Image (cartoon, rainbow, N blue to C red; front, side, top):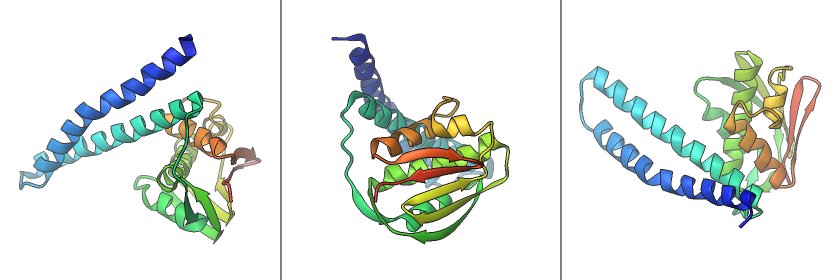
Length: 193
């Protein structure tokens, strides 16, 4: 077995194996969260639940990247409106402000994964661009995120591995035969239509 294939297999196995202890932690944290506890304890339990959710998402992103890299990526595609997808992605961002506008069209993508990719790109644009909010303009199958700065551009394109979410998002869109390009101070995400 070649070294690249061994690496892909090792990461795939790690993603699978990490889910079991994560499921235990998340399950017990959610069980505890449903009981009445003192306020500081409630906050700590919620922090555990949030961290478990974040770990689960990171494992999903890593797993998708391994599937793409190994040539085994075969997502289940759904028809979804691009504007609804963008709005759902923005609604999931609690710490960043994203203004969504435009006109959508039906795209054929894996809905959950693509929604997460759009969310991760908007988050990375704000986080690595040093801005408080970003705009997400939808024009059919084209989504434009702005502003993009010199610091955020390499992260958003997947050229800088500072953030796994953005790296996985760019890889996903390209694997779907879409594109992720920086045009001036905008990131243009072209989804397959």
